Amino acid sequence: MNVDLHTHTYPASDCSRISYRDYIGWCVDNAVEAVALTNHGDISDNLRLGPALAAEGVLLIDGVEISTLFGDFVVFSPDLDYLATLRAVQEALRPGEVPDHAAVVWVHPGAGGGRSGSHYYPGIEHMVAGAVDAVEVFNGSWLGQDHVAIAEELAATLGVARTGGSDAHDPADLMTCFTELPDPITSTADVVRALRRGLTIPRRRRAPVRRKRFKLF
Ligand SMILES: [Zn+2]
Ligand SMILES: [Zn+2]
Image 1 (cartoon, helix red, strand yellow):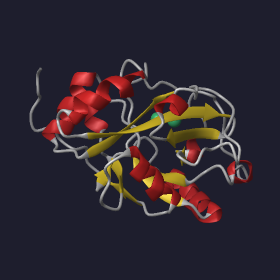
Image 2 (cartoon, rainbow, N blue to C red):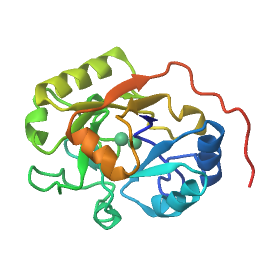
Image 3 (cartoon, rainbow, N blue to C red):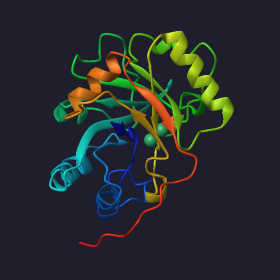
Image 4 (cartoon, rainbow, N blue to C red):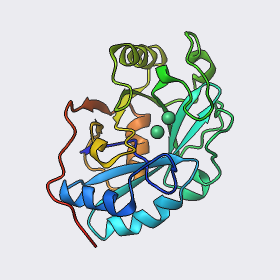
């Protein structure tokens, strides 16, 4: 199953222009089976969109993005109470701090921390090793060859899974990058397992997916 593992909605991510209506409409119009909502230290949109998407037959994968001194990380877990403890800007998770039910993806590593203002530097992977299950090698905002190369090298050095995610803040950018996951994916826990086992394949799409029609409700 192909899943966009990195998206943002408004208002939980105030930097996003994707409303609930746009998000649900896009999923329905494009026959999306599952999508990950990964707002900045905020699960309020997950709580609202999860049931609304389920009613349309779309599985919402729950995650939260945190910005740290070492860069940005998306933490996935089916435990929303745990995700609710994470903040938009906070300390990096240390090895042993990541619960068994969670998986951590180091997103756009070459770009540094979006909200923490931290910068990538060679060798930083030693600071996060043991607390990262995957590296996002394709990010819709950072597809330059230098950024992809840094991420690929980090994934190889750390020996962890590789993912793709659009990091969409605009409906037109959804699914520009995504991750191929082994079927069946029926829950966030399935995604956590696939990440921890290294069973993910990063994919990218050059042109944005066109919305066929705009659903009003
Ligand atoms: Zn980020
Ligand atoms: Zn993001």
